[in-house]
Length: 142
Image 1 (cartoon, helix red, strand yellow):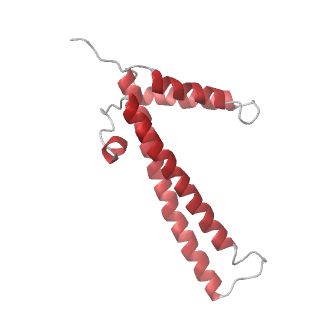
Image 2 (image 1 turned 30 degrees about the vertical axis):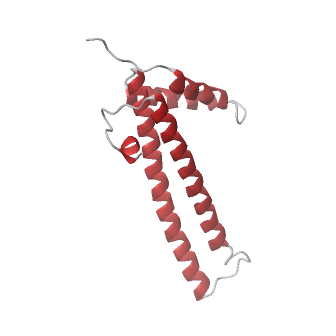
Image 3 (image 1 turned 180 degrees about the horizontal axis):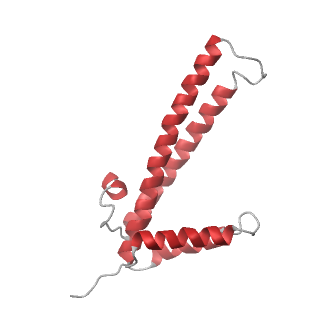
């Protein structure tokens, strides 16, 4: 699974089943990172909730909490890289130029989300996910 998510950045391909497996792993990892990050911030905030200057123990707990939050944020950036790499591999498997198509997909998503009510762009995003899953692989004939 690590090879699917992080190896062969410029030339790799991901079939439909491998794409779904990688997507499930990344969604679970993003959810865990989000829960841990929220817990760390809540834990660090609990020591200064009254607005008073925390004591030495509270300060130490806050520093440790924010340091751990930095580690989790670095993990989230790593997962974002793996997510973009997985989508690029699937696009390459479909037969599209991966990073250019990925830039167009995100640019169109941003364009559709401007000026629309919150959540209106989910139709576009859902359509993109369905296309990534259902489009067959492109195999050139020699």
